[in-house]
Length: 379
Image (tube, rainbow, N blue to C red):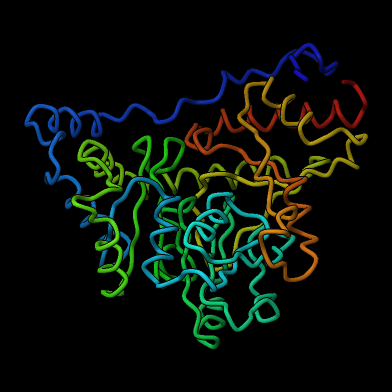
């Protein structure tokens, strides 16, 4: 199925000049890469850029040890291995999460345990953890998703009470602050992603961060297979270092734009913005919404997203979730809200949040137009 602007009988097309490109042109990144090319460090096994990146991340996020690697997905697996998680163990995660986290648990031979999410932000419901834990439970994978943040102080208390490790997935939230601390630093291990769409991007890549010397040592030992078998390249590291300097300012711009857009869309039928955590500052890789199709003549979420995309706005459906993976996981509870998240979540890609207020107004107008047309049945 496809939509065009002509499919909506709501007047002329909204003027949104297509989704902004990502990554953006950054002279500091260009300069860093050109220097690495010129001095030959880009092609070395052990050049200066990886070490410089690790040091800069550690300083920014107040982490004692940082291990750059090939992807955020692998970093989750490496974190579990470095915590001694393996066959016979269980690892808790949300019933709605990034698919790679489920597979990372399976990759180390452990069994996923699925816990429902909160309805207000589609993130792990910490209040349901006690009922999900068993004798073989060893760790929790805690993801910050779609502008939402987990209440890490409460989660850390549950983990302490049951002697569980925490792998804090901050792949969508670099630079976010959770209850006074940087996202990724609450757990035994934190994880970042540098994938091509991420707030910090090198096309691919990730990092493990921890204050535990034993975890860091196990990570190094596992990766050193004659040489580092799962590296971040020197050229990628060179491109990432200047992005760290710009991250706080860009996150602040995204935060302001998300607030502006939320105000402009607060009364739009068919959409409910996901709620941010109190006393925290999110980093908006994705800005999440719940789609309420019963308010829009029963039109599907996919149809709504396609129509908004046809107006030039990068609004996409969320993850599929894990509700159908019961044969491979232990399920704690009914996963009612996880199913609803998988069926209703919509996410706005972050580059548009770096645009000026007039563009945010255009984005809101495009979404309002589509919602009005759907509500009126003019599609």
